[in-house]
Length: 252
Ligand code: MG
Image (cartoon, rainbow, N blue to C red):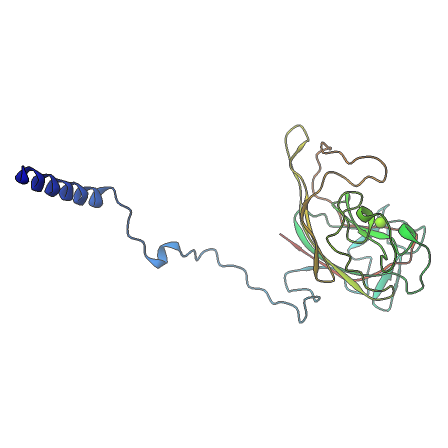
């Protein structure tokens, strides 16, 4: 009996030995999980987080608005360029980028008028439309209540910002927007909806929000929308003299 037991143990060891040689995992080495190519592109970051990095497209440099932007009719924008910024001129309509974009990181600085006029949506209202359809609201919400899903840095009428990071009117503010364009099914419905992350003055206020559909002033945004391709960045003329400067974008 003892002999049989010893033989069994020996057989077991032998079987394990064979198994270890033929079926066991290869011993790993550190370099087996190192990925070297292609090399990650080297860029130079700006002096401050607000400055355009070397791989950005500068959409507005404070001087020439006509290089990258047109009005709604494709003509030179009639907004006022002065003192390194461009300001909405009431009634002159939206401005839009000549280039069209899909996935991107956008930096934009804006300033609502120092002279406070109006309340709620009537104070320092503009907006950044992503792919011409999805508005990140610009509004002076410094001591100015409005509906939460329509205040500054909201995805307009869809998602309130996590916090109100507004600076006082007349001060420059920043939006850093990371946008992933929607992907579509063949029938035009979203395969994946647009996703948007917004930092307002460096503070996270939209965290990879799934946009429900194109911005609607009236009614519910549609999940099932018409398939669309790349689109411009649009800045809204809502009648208030909102200014912009230092606009740059990095295509992803
Ligand atoms: Mg607006």
